[in-house]
Image 1: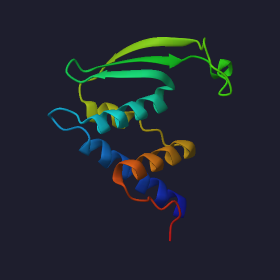
Image 2: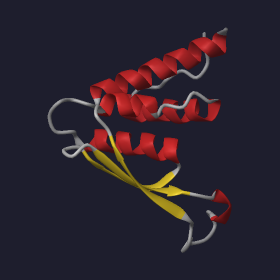
Image 3: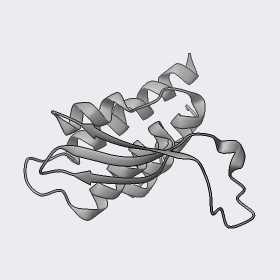
Length: 124
C-alpha cells in the first residue's frame, strides 16, 4: 500500500513537471536538459538532440551494453541512429515514463534537481 502511494506520487509529480516544461513558446535550456534525460533513460540513448520546431528527436540508441566499460574510454559502443517524429511533445515525453523501481528512483532524482526540494522516498 505504501509503495503504491509513493509510486503514484512520483509518477504524478514527474508528469506535472513535464507539463510545466512544455510551454507553447521557446523551451528554456534547463527544461531541454530534462527532456533529454527522460529520452536517454527510456531509449538507452548515448546522444539525443531535439528539434522542437520540426518536432523531431534524433538519437543514437545503444544496442548492447555489454561492450560498455565505465572504467575506460569507450571508443566503440554499437549504436543505432534513430530519427523520431512527435505530434505533441508533452504526450510523447509522458509516454516515455517507465514505471519500474529503478526508473522511479531516477525520476525522484530529477524531481529533486528541478523542483529544488526533496521528494520523500519513504511514506510517513
